[in-house]
Length: 357
Image: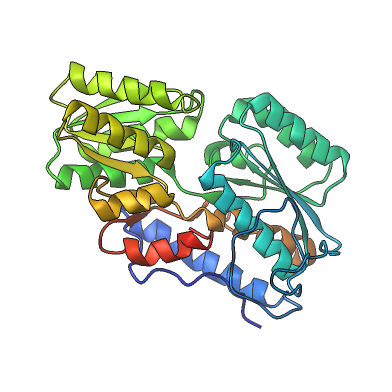
């Protein structure tokens, strides 16, 4: 029986030439994983829909009716560093819960943006003797002890989103995500092609190594001046103020690259407030970014297709539990970068509306 997943956009992700071969290898591996996972399904599939609960529910439940929790023997805890109401992490959560329903696996999703709090969630999952862990590692140093303790307890771990460089050394069986430096290079190269001369790269979360890697990659791909600006994502008013101040202080800045979809809206407001002609581009998607691309106030978004960062690790842990399979050979399974612009935004918006992009 085939594994159900959202239809892919007709426009394939754009990948820098030097990494195209490597990305293709991992893409083939991911397709093989999905095909193998189809053999594990025991019930019919239904189209994906946005999920809002904390645990996976049975796939056979009628639409709109309360669903019973999955009774599968495998229990997986997904623990991210996402903040409350973060649209990006809601999509990751939807992917994990959908995979749990389809595979008959109990999946619990929790998150804490504070690294110490995230480490405690990992410790709690270990104490509950879960059968598998999925962990995002924006701050690997803060999570190292907790992740290694899970591995020592015999719990297989798949890391996602951030921390790919530390994943194998911490004992994880695989990593699913986007190579941030590669994605940054792609974003920088596109801004260069669009005729930009000086870029402001807005970092919204201190201590997140992936964000610095994005800016470093953008600097490499752009080949010109890229200036980092630190802001606090928890304070939107301050974000707008800082971007506005940076644009006023240096009128040579004609491009703003944000690393989060919510920050992109703040950047658009700041550009408008000072009458700057700077072009805004961003990482990641939300409805505001999609509308801004349609309106022309955001030129493009780097899409790491985070639904897969929730979905694929559950499949990987199910295959590891049932068949001893691993994927990637110690290298990350890449979910991006893809790019969303005026050429494909209408199609992607349809998927975003159901909570899968």
